[in-house]
Amino acid sequence: MTTVLETNAIQPAPPAVSAMQDIPLPQIQESKTNPRRQFDETKLVELADNIRQHGVLQPVLVRPLPGGDPSFYELVAGARRYRASKLAGRETIPATVRNLTDTECLELQLIENLQRADVHELDEARGYAALMQLQPETYTVETLAEKIGRSEKYVYARLRLTHLVDEVQQAFYTGKLTVAHAFEIARLTPTDQQRALGECFPQHRTTTALLKDKKAEAVTVRELRGWIEREVHLDLTNAPFDTQNENLLSAAGSCVRCPKRTGTNPLLFPEAVGQKKSICTDRQCYRAKVEALVQLRVKPLEESGEKPLRVSQAPAWQAKNAKSDVLHEGQYRRAQKKGECPQTNPAVVIDGPDAGKLLHVCRDEKCPVHAKTTRYQPTPQQRAERAKEALAERIEKQMRFRILNAIRKKLPPTLSRPDLEMAVLDYFERLGHDNHRRLCRVYGWEEKKVKAAWGGSTVDYRTIAGNAVGEMSTQEVQHFLIVCALVSDLSCPGYNPRQALGKDSNLARTAARCKIDTAKVSATVRAELSKPVKKASLKTDKTTRTKSK
Image 1 (cartoon, one colour):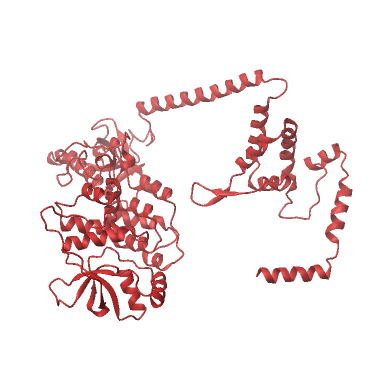
Image 2 (cartoon, one colour):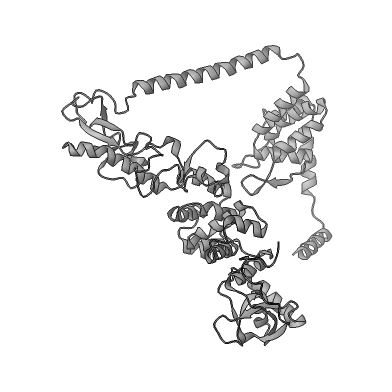
């Protein structure tokens, strides 16, 4: 990646670099276009200490201050060295002077920052955006990707970060959100971004409280994506309106060409490539189109003098901010036709896949025609669908039952090794976490933690046991099955931890069959644990604890 980039082929080359010179710090002004806005104060202090001892080893880059005093300069590259020199109390700083245009200055600042590992992703994004704004004809996503040696998807993802609302930017800058969190949120509308920030930190009620909490931890990226899929994204394949209609909502146009549809923007939604689903990411626009469809259906009825009711297919307890002029499921009965009873009214569905559908409903609780049937009377289509589902369930259950019976009849007199391992490990999994730990202690297995899918660490007891059983002989596997059956008796009840082992317990009865003298074992353990601790040992233990502290 080159450090100086051409911005226009017809521009003359910049003048040669001047000799390095020491410039007084008060005569240098920081550039307002520098993409880097975050500086680690701890690292600045460390750099200042280094400058006090060794000086500035690499000169900063400056240019004559545009339209200002010729003795003053604008800092192009080296903001950390400049600030650290101030902290170190130096009066001058070694600098190289170049005559640079605004575009060349911004390019150098962007490249200089990109070559440093600690540049913040949002600062990088602002650098790209500034270049594109300065010369939109020269700088596009494609040309920037080529110049910096990155993919177009990378540049587009960085640019999208500039769409973050202020609250999310602050959380991102302070390290409470990762770049993966930020990118997922940046793809949402401003309103949904604020909702997503609240979902990332459910334990904080306000953004102010979140930003003050230095130990705040966000939910995992997977959990954030799950929330977005449930609460924000909408599947257009089930939309009640025609997604190709340009005139339904003139301000939005057709969904097919909308940039907020995942399939239209593969750079912003690379995961949508190849998927059959068509996802809308703007819930407000979707609702506006549904409302436009409802109004389209209502208008002819109103023009004919009728007053159609607005009905919802959801029960009232599911509705957020329920409106008084909307009837919810359970507050009306559907009529088969107009005039079925004196109280029948025309209605239009306002939500769900049937939004815009015209109905006739009755609201009279004592209607002699409709009170005979429940409000939830299924339609013939619903009855047929339920019967189809019930048949599929019976087929699945009966198939499994017959497969098990066929296996039972073909089992050999002596279990094969795979069957034995399968039974043992299945039994092991059913024992529960506490018994898994006890078995690890019995067999001396290392409880090594591994990274879990949700981001933390856990002990994968299933894998530990599976590896151990695979190395056992057939006799040892059979013994392990017996130990699994007995391990739960190692637990002493919490309400009475001193309760004696019951004579009818599996552990006691198996000990009797194996001719183990449990009374003798109990006496031996009592004698070992009742021995007085020597003073020397106590002193050694205290010394050890003091050293460990």
